[in-house]
Length: 555
Image (tube, rainbow, N blue to C red; front, side, top):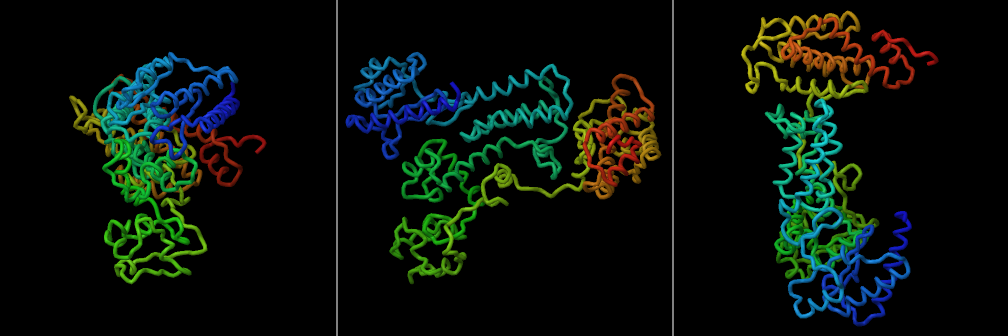
């Protein structure tokens, strides 16, 4: 059965169930479902049914299931079904179990791949998530992946495996740190390797423009995804049964800002601890005041007035449930004379022709994961050299090694974690100590490569100091100009091939002439230029001329 047809069939089941319940005076709702008239939740072929632990009520549900089975052929499988009863149910427990023939279950249970629990989420509950990550890592064990390849797998696969869980729970930090440890080890050493990380994970998780690799922090992502749940509560647009349930059974006459965070389930209390982050991420814009609560919403810069001015409702005679429109008349504030003068002095502007609106502090005014993460991870200054790693012609494996070289985190012989018998540079027969400053580009071998590139494509590198040269290149080759993009790709390719040559000489005792190295650099960049479709223009003609590329026939 196609998903669309299945939804239509299950809608018939919902209608039938509602009809039978309306005509069954003996039916009693679950005590936390009555006000919403909630009896069932359905996703695919998984169905949750709710009612009081009361045999006549259960019979209404089972009789409806039997009737539906006659109509559709979809029958309940008792062997795969469970009933969960409250511990307070004693007298009718055995009678109910015998009538249904279901196994008696208990929380936590797994539903749609995640645990349903009313208590603290444990590491054991999250074991399936860890096992899933381990299984993916084991599948990549025998693949010879570059740093860039492993980075892409982390971003596209490993970082997203926990998204489903992270959207439902605030996961234990121990679990998230364990997952990040696995990701960190995989990035630097592969599936089964071990050793020191070249760059701190905090730096790796920064955005690219701030000098990182753009891997999302799992802790920040988890909190950002849970902020979306709070945002949905604020919006309360009637499209979520869960949000309706929260307002009916949790908040009641409170708002999300003033609800006592010490009551409720473990997950609910953890969610409420994110309210300070939510407060910094939203803005209340007052319209006619008909939607905002006078005392309990954060329309005022001091926050909920019932918290900063607790005697206000008593002194003014305006109860906690008062709407903001009660003190707005014809676009004018009309406060009781007894109100605190400081509150009146800090009133925001209003627009009586518009509705009250809550905006997310982003360009679109609505929640986005990226903007939520930025609330949790404050930004740091943009690095000058960010542009050197960008462009149409970039090669990921080249860019990763260039990033390490810029950070001076390649395993050169001067690094304390590198075991060594001698510090000499293998590219120039050990006459100088091997450092980033020496390799790029004080070594006679790397200088020879620069000289060849200058003669062939006018690639110019005026400084012998590595960091000073990077500053120059960041300014000289910035922007989207294709020639500049090609020179940035050339720098990355040169650094990459020099490092490969260094490793070959050190570990395999094989060497390659500088002419061959530069040939590989030129070939790599030329192939990238030819692979990118560029519309005909003077800029493109100039690029092809510098790189000695034949202009395609027919363009």
